[in-house]
Image (tube, rainbow, N blue to C red; front, side):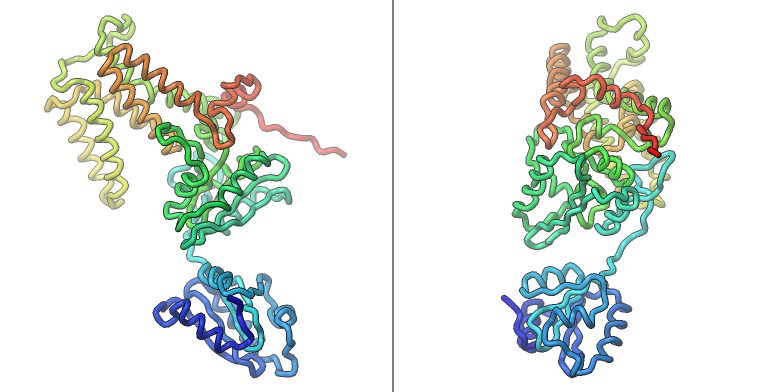
Length: 471
């Protein structure tokens, strides 16, 4: 439906369509501009009141003989504001109104004046809890899209940086920003991503980026390794853009989706670059080794305990000091589930109770569970290492991928002994090798296909490239 020049008809239609009486936060106000009736609609809590106060003062000075016959002329002459638009259709107007944009109607004009004077509720830009660094910037993304794009723009002041706004969700109409650097991005992948977002037919992105990820790339569910990298750090997002990646920002989400992402991209962290090359290389290699240990440590230990004759002399100390009352396989599986239970409990525990409850849980789970015979001390030791070491890398998705592979290995070893470990090892390697990024490339490039120069960059932190300024 298109608007008419008669304001009363427009108001009657919008009052019924928007249920203005029933929605207390949907505010409208009528007044006069040069003798003509006018009305503004806005959402309470989204609008800057001082902007409209200044505009009202300007409207009061307009004389009837100065009113132009065309809405475009009125907009140019009497709306001295940076973000003003004209909308003809009611559907587009309602979508913008519910997004927080103020809408102005004046009797005699068949268009709606839209003014973007939004003021979103927002928390402070502080360091994210998960992606902390020892050295570097302490700002992080928030739930407001425009703030997040500004944090990236602050770091990359180049006209080639492009941020396209898109919209999806039949009910939510969620704003999505697709960010890329012209000349460095994979144009084919970019076109594919934008096409998939455009063709999305969902009611709402209830889980923000996770809902979007599942819609634009419905990969095989049984492969647990993540296809996307998530970061709450603007510096990480800016560095990824300069490397040719695509960043997707979703309104109401305080993190950036980085794609395409390989396993080497996901393991990388900002600390690798905030320290000198030798320190960054050490951090990167130690994180890689620890990640492998979290995957194979407990399965290998269970295999040795089931086959004591396989233990070499220099590893005799890993033998059990006491006979287990509960089979080792069940001990390890119970601890795997118990640790997740404690993790979920920690998330829902009030901060003032976290420390005392952690002490109680540590005493009960550690000392008394060993004394009661439920667990051996060696089992507790190795599972404690795996649990703590799992946080050496910041990706929750990758951590759970390692966990699922580790549990699969434990089950296979318990059922088929040595052959179970061989089968599980082959399956774990295949899960990585035959995995593909969203761009269709190898998940472990540059290892497969082998590219030695690029592999060296992935494993060893070199000096950042620089160009000398030409005179």
